[in-house]
Image (cartoon, rainbow, N blue to C red):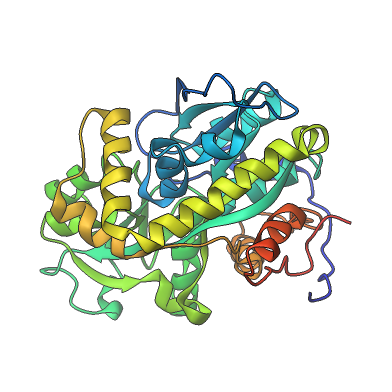
Amino acid sequence: MSAARPLTPLRTLAAIAALPLLLTACGYGSDSADDDKQAQVAADAKKLSADEVRIGYFPNLTHATALVGVEEGIFQKELGGTTIKASTFNAGPSEIEALNSGSIDIGWIGPSPAINGYSKADGSNLRIISGSASGGVKLVVNPDKIKSLKDVKGKKIATPQLGNTQDVAFLNWIAEQGWKVEAQSGKGDVSVVRTDNKVTPDAYKSGSIDGAWVPEPTASKLVAEGGKVLLDEADLWPDKKFVITNIIVSQTFLKEHPDVVEAVLRGSVKANEWINANPDKAKASANEALKKESGKALPAEVIDPAWKSISFLDDPLAATLDTQAEHAVKAGLLEQPDLNGIYDLTLLNKILDAEGKDEVDDAGLGAK
């Protein structure tokens, strides 16, 4: 593992007026929804050290590991007599709040809310214990107004929220073009319009935005409305991989119930294995889970291209999370966070080693 890069402490959060909104996840719909879903447990199944484990995730394709793992009973099989209780969230802050309050024990979440949540708690609340997904983010534009990347200058481009994962990525890309944008207001050589993903397709149809840097399935919804993919964010990263979804755990729960955490991680590894071995079945399973959440499945013209753009993997791609934090700092949206200790990949690597798979790295940011 590489040596940890020196990181200075996070300065006063109040110095950044918009920080309560900063680094939120890319959710859809309302802030949160507790679905109180409990899987059926066999009467003779043996309990682990906890009666139940409460997990949280978003009803998004980028959280398909959790969607499929619950839908197919993969987690429950690993947990035996310990009941899994699932709740869904549509924004990172509400999921972090639930973890901090003890309402959930383990969660699937994007890199930016994990960074922000860990920093605001001075590293005392959570650990990232696994990766889950990479990719699934695109710049989609109106082809009548934007023909090439240079045409983005002067246009109105949506991102999900000030300082969220995609907003930071877009601001960093703008800076790399040599263009100037004031991060807080979004004004400058490009107009960055912070728009909730659930209304972005309507904003695109009305012409109030010229494009959007957004995650799936919003990107494919825009394509279905006539938009064109101008850039896939994966093309900007080494090996075309960057973390979009991690698994986090309460430090208290990890300390008190490591056997339960290990069982959930085994379920995650097996869910990803099943997804990659059975992509069509997994896509249908994820869509069925989304239908149960929202009452409506995604149409083929949306889910098919969206599914292809996401990679499901156990590696948390720790170096890319560190880079994403640096991008937020460069954009002026975040004071330098101390991310030392944000990862604890001990249980994940134990599972991977037992299955003859390569262990994964924490980029020098592991718990000591």
